[in-house]
Amino acid sequence: MKRTFLLLLSGLLWVSCERKTASDVYDKPYHDVYRQDPAENDSILKANNAELTLRPLRVIFTGYPQYALLPMLKVRYDDDGSPYTNDIEYNELSYRNENDYEELRNKADYYNMHNNIVAGFEAIYGDDLMNILITNNTTGERKMLFEQPVRIKNFYYPSPLTDVLANKPVKRQYYMVSCYDEDTNKDGYINRDDLRRFYLFSLDGKLVRALIEKNYGVVGSDYDYVNDLLFVYAYLDSNNNGKIDAKDPKHIFRIDLKKPETTSVVYN
Image (cartoon, rainbow, N blue to C red; front, side):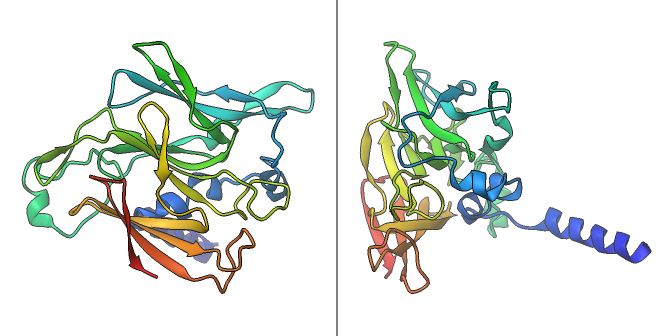
């Protein structure tokens, strides 16, 4: 019994000391720890999702008073037919991105990210997060980010707080979305077996471009806060079967978050 307790204690200490990185946002999300039944998870979003019902969770405030966001969750049903939303699957991402520049961190406000994992952004994610409703508080206009429900892995939006990098304020003017939006492998479902896309949207919800070409499957990223660069890891769907295979090559891309309209290749 004593040995079992010590093993459990050491395991808890290891978990509590594990360092978080930007890639954790993509590779180790909350819902991978508290995952529902795999069969239910795989069928959470059918390719033909005409009967899917969504419900807003709550209002999310952005760095622009003109715009507010409503995360739209999939409505589930109890055995008796009562509707509910799986709110435990909804989360907000905010934790410190550690660095080795102690002399800079000791300077007041030289680097201050307010515990955001990517400077200037807060992020939300969850297994049942299917869309984002953007509301314009000035005009009253509303717009869904996607025309049809998708499986959003991560949604980055401008933080209400002003982060600081190298003693300069960071103000984002766009959204970034990592999602599964197409049944790329043609199995009838939109799930983790499909290619994950990464998109850039304007503040009013208009698609600007795909940050990574759509014949890739995004698997992770790392944020370089010193240079304000996002390095994205993705696999090329080399045989065009709509999923990532063991032989598909891994490429690395670089996105300058100060001007995200262009993506450069680091490795291919």
